Length: 101
Image 1 (tube, rainbow, N blue to C red):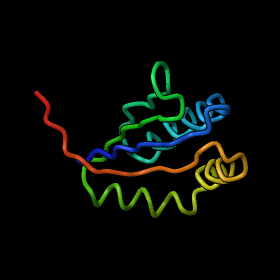
Image 2 (cartoon, rainbow, N blue to C red):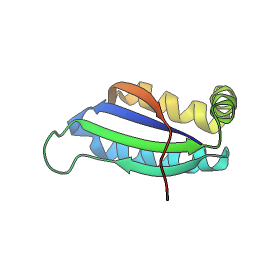
Image 3 (cartoon, rainbow, N blue to C red):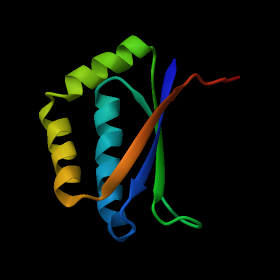
C-alpha cells in the first residue's frame, strides 16, 4: 500500500470552496480505486493550511489513477474549478507507507 499525503496552502477566504472541492475528490479517488482517508481543513492555528491522505494498493495503481484522472471528465472539471477560483495557492505531495496493526 502507498499513501499520498498532500499539504495545501489555501486561500483562507475560500475555505468553503476548498471544502466543496475536497468532498468531490473524496468521491473521485474512491471511484477510481483508491481509499480516501479524508481532508483536514483549518480549525485552530494556521488558517491557510489543509491536508489530505489517500491510499492505493501500489505505486503502479496510483500512477494508473493519475493517468486516468488526466482525461476523466469529472477530474478535469474539478481541477478546472480550482484553477478558475484560485482557492489553492500551492500544494506538496509526499508518499508514505502505512504501518498498521
